[in-house]
Amino acid sequence: MIRVENLSKNYGPVKAVRSISFDLDDGQVIGFLGANGAGKSTTLKIMTGYISPTAGNVYYNDHNIQENTSEIQKDIGYLPELNPLYGEMRVHDYLKFISEIRGIPKENFKSSFQKVVEECALNAVAHRTIGNCSKGYKQRIGLAAAMIHDPKILILDEPVSGLDPNQIVEIRQLIRKLGKEKIVIMSSHILQEIQATVDRIIIINEGSIVADGSSDSLLSDTNAKTELSMDVENADENDINDMKAIIPSIDISSISKEGTYTKINIKYPKNNDPRSDIFKYAVDKGWTILEMFATKQNLEDIFRNLTSSNESNNG
Amino acid sequence: MGNSLIIFKRELKSFFDSPMAYVFLVVFALLNGWFFTTTFFLYGQSDLRTLFNIVPLVYLFFVPGITMGLISREKGLGTIEIISTLPIEDRDIVIGKYLSAVALISIALLSTSIHFITLVSFGTSIDYGAVFTGYLGLVLVGAVYASIGIFSSSVTDNQVISFIIGIAIIFVFWLFDKVLVFMPDMLAGIIQYLSVEYHLSNISRGVIDTRNLIYFGSVIGFFLFLTTRLVESRRWS
Image (tube, rainbow over all chains, first blue to last red; front, top):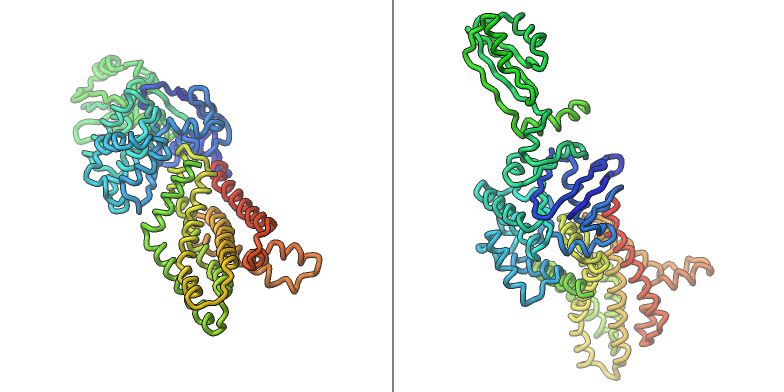
């Protein structure tokens, strides 16, 4: 189990991470989601022991990473964000080098090597020089290096960047498979990626956690709003604006005249469905409803809502 | 220590995987060969003193050239993040890399053994002891310069800057012996003790004195310690 307590990191005057806390259990795939520069990579770097936090602690089964760095690093496989590699080395030699430092016995290397080569589909380049491999292969070489010692914890910073759609699906499946026995922590700024791969999403914005939960629970958040789109005929604009006084739970976000009818967009809280009231109001006023449909807010909207409020404050 | 050995092997292989090692070895052999042979037959002395005088000067450019990328390249490429998150102490990374540079310098010195063969073929009453200690001195000076070089490499993520800093520091150590005449008596003793040439000349004469060995050991230890601290400092940046 991993426990992150009040973690903060300042780079000079810049507060990259601001007092974040969370717990992670075994057998979970966790996704860090945030815009570029939100503090995802910094958090992951602290969790791997690469950099130290300004304040706060990271515990692995009650052992502090600051005090038992090398010991804890034995259990972690890490793929850094920019996936740095020794371009002059051959893939086989590089993985051998990593496995030697990881303390994998010589006689076990061959089987570990074959396993990761197969899982990461590196057969074609296993004896090629890393510098001559394509970006997709390089990304998978980095992933293979992170997995070769069969770690209990995998920390993957943007694992699918640079991969083509087929490779993304393969890596996604691999991550899901690995997540059954290990803790897999991955970060991404691509929402669909996180949504498709992880059990739990932690959304980070400007160094703070703004949401934490499964994608379903984030979607069913009571603060989430549903949008209702209506096309009506014979509607007077004053009547439309007066609707808010009769049905207080709604927000009229836009009214536009589209030829013979008027398009109205209304937002309302998920736990307070006003649709029958809106229908009765329309009948009272003699409107003809051509179309009326509710669009549930998706994760992207939630993400944008959560991360844009601060941006507008700063802007 | 086992981990230092793994790093050592990787670094040494990486030197020879690129053309760099070969270029350096050839240039080193040619430079020393030129300076040695032009005067060897002229003076007609059965020793390698000319060689032992010229090598430290060639080191001035040669050693920073070897060491400039040791750590700065890892920083520049970002691979420092890979090795720093492996279960290996920063100290072992520094020692492994340092020893690979010393090994390459020793290999380069081996290329000068051709002059020793010339000496044995043409010379008379050769002082083999002085030749042995002369070579020992050159290895030790190379080791000191390599520790300065790896330190310069840990200061920056730019190999060219690291090369220049390395030359500058080594130049100061080399200069100590040359500026002694301008120094007040009080300082002269200290400056002389700090001078690499002073300790090298003692050893080259065939005298292995523990004071000289302690000097070489402490300078190497000092710079390796600083390098390790600088590598660790990334945590607090």
